[in-house]
Image (cartoon, rainbow, N blue to C red; front, side, top):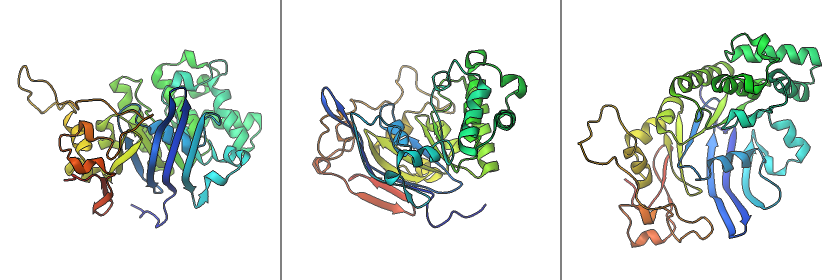
Length: 327
């Protein structure tokens, strides 16, 4: 395996995203920092609503210009994306950084054929003519395993099954051979058999194209299968980062341990009448977040010191935790 370069391909530092709502300022993302190296898959995992998708949209500057505020530093291949003009960002989106969205039926335009939607990116970013872009679109669909790709070019999204629509979205995202792929819950709407096929496809394409992948999910089983490193997110804050094997073997943050304990296991004989493990309590309000650790009101190990902001602690190479009660 080729070693990762010393400088990460993507660097996110102290990302803050706030939304102006009728109830006040909502702090969707608070101080998120991580690196994504060339050729690796980083899992961004956490409960629904914890800020994973907002983080991804922030990287591509796809948040609405009105009613949102974003600060921090986002560097791609050494360039500060925050300093890019909108025309410069359009040359990055879909070309050098691509994204697979969560629900293929809503991500695809229902009034254009699959071929037109894949070919559009090739015309825009590669400068191909109509015929060349159409031919390349067919090749892109074939590469992601869409059966009878030439016929699929002329079909509309509603004529494809959920799994085929997801393959079409992957073809669109990878048509211009980007350096980074952001996959936002790419298997959530699919049954488990199709999920396995899509995950295998993404893994194969990643290795074939040398992609760096930011894989966003709430499914810890998928994280274990697909990622080299994991960042665990809660209420807009990253609580722990580590190599995937290290995180599953030695989870340090109480939230990470609680998440892993709540995953049903086929090899675990659960006592009759006893409930599965659950994380008690509620996620704190992001409009008026409490002081200190945001997990403290649900944490079984909470103590008075948790009223203060916990520092980052490095437990070993690349294993970071934001907690007073780590270990």
